[in-house]
Each structure stands twice: as structure tokens, then as C-alpha cells.
Length: 383
Ligand code: PLP
Image (cartoon, rainbow, N blue to C red; front, side, top):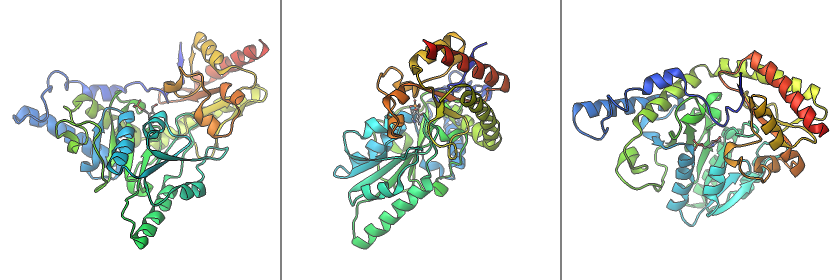
């Protein structure tokens, strides 16, 4: 029996999501932009999916722009705003996903630090925002350490900036974007409560298909498209829609948001049990990031004197699938930028394991995985 504990990297397609998608490749294969009735029925299915997504965000359905995954959505938010306002600057946090780090790198950019627990420094963030800042992009819940940022507090900072600008007659708009990819399984996504103008979601991390997601774009927010083509998705994302993907995405979001409280409770109990086993049994083991505002399924543990890469390989041999950090950075020898942002030493960052639980994780698996990790970490330490 292999034990999967890397749900932050990928989630299995839920059977009900798969069921909902079937038929949109062969029976209802029509181009939703065609005019005959059969195609218009497909258009209606997309619109229903858009309404479902909008419902969980408390948004208008016209504010949901479907994209090919979260990386594209983040690029559309960041590059879309920065291309629209070329003489402006962007502020991001030091713990953003690679998609935000890299898509913002070529613009005038400032990076807001986090403290040693992973929490964004709001005072520093406000200092970094100036009259030319067009966008602030802050990850809602981190993919490596699970830290949840208070997006509504960031929104209050932005609101103050707006009011100052109004008084001074500064015309430059300022928008707030959040990457809610990992948050979507467990947290409230209502955009008005969060106070965001732009929000990214991915189906791939919520038991939906890969390469589909969305960008929420509030009302009058001004963006340049990334991809030019047909007038689909309000001309912000041309190209024939990924119909089955969109249907699956909406179904998946409905699924995870419907029972998010129960699932958060269940998974956090299992996570805490595993954490206890690891901290009690492995001398000097420490958790990175706060336990207070953290995704219920995330654990990031430092094992002194153990090489993280070797630990992952040995655990794989023993049937436990975990990661050292983000899957998209796995081929990179550099220590995680997230752990470094928490002022962790290179040694610590190279000796850490990211464990992420999910809907199929059960008590038996956690017990077995705990024993195996303790065993393998202990033997690697002696070598
Ligand atoms: N943002 C976060 C927080 C993620 O965890 C991921 C994927 O790992 C992404 C963005 C990118 O998502 P996708 O692979 O769907 O483009």
C-alpha cells in the first residue's frame, strides 16, 4: 500500500467531478460559440459553471474569467495590470508562488517581508506602496508552509492608500490580487469579505482536472489580455473554451467548499497526530511557520542532520510520497525561497519535509506514515 501525502502538489480527480465532465468531449463536443441549439446548450453549461464559481466567491458571474490553470491566471493578473499601467510598480510578498515571483520580475517590483513565523509584515507592506503602485499581490495560503495571510487586513491598507490618493488627486488605480489556489479547499473565498479585486483559483488542487482555473476580476478593474484571439472570456482570454475542464472545475469547487469546515476539522486532527509523532520521536525536529494561522492539511518539518532530498527518496522506496517543497521547484537545488524568507538557514531549508494531507488520507495511513518517517529519518541521521 503506497501512502500519498503530497496533496499540495496534485489532487486526484473526484469521481463526481469525472462524472460531470464525461460527455463534454464526445456527445456535447460543440463549440460553445456556434449558433445552433446543441452548441448553445454547451454555452449554457459553461454559464452555469460560471455561476457556480461566482456563487462561492460572492461575485457576479461576469467577473469570472476561466483560464488554463493558476499559473496563467496569476500571469494575467500581474502582467495584465502591469502592461495596462506601464509606468507603475507592483508589490508582492516574499512567500509568493513561483508564478507570481517570475511573472512580476521584469517590472518595477518591491518585495514585502514576512516574519519568522511566515506572517506578512503589514507595516513594511504599507511603507513599500507608493503613488505609482498599481498592484499588490499576496498569496492567501502558502503552498509550502500553509501559512494563511490576513488578506482583509491587506485590503484595509489598500483602502487607506486609495483614500489618500483621492485626497491628493492621484489618478493611478491600485488593485489587490490574491493567489487562493491552496486556500480553496478549506477557507472562505468571498471576495467582498477579503476585499480583493483579483483572485486566482486552480481546479488541479481541489480534486478537479489540471490546466483549468480562473481569475476573478472585479467590476471595472483594468487589465491587458495575455492571449489575443477570439472574444471568449470578455476578450481577456481568447480561444475555444476548455468545456469539460470548466465543468469539472465548477463541480470541484462546489464539492470542496460545501464541506470545507468538516474536512478541515478531520484533516487537522490527522495532521496534528502526525506532527506529535514526529516531534516526540525525532530529536530536535521543528515545524516551520506558525501553527495558528495555517492550512489544516499542511506540515513542514525540519529534521536536523537529515538531507531532505535523500529522505524523500528513501520514503518513496518505503511507499510514502512526500516532498521537500513545491513540486515546481523540485528539480532546483536552491533552498526554498519560502523557508529563506522565514530566515531559516540553508542547512535547515535543505533538511525539511513538506507533508500535505487530503480527502483520502485516513488514520491508518497517518499511523503508518508516522512510523516510516521516524524510522527513515533516524537511519539517515546515523549515516
Ligand atoms: N499558486 C499556488 C499557491 C500553487 O500551489 C500552485 C501550484 O502548485 C500554483 C499557483 C500554480 O498552479 P497551476 O499548476 O495550476 O498553474
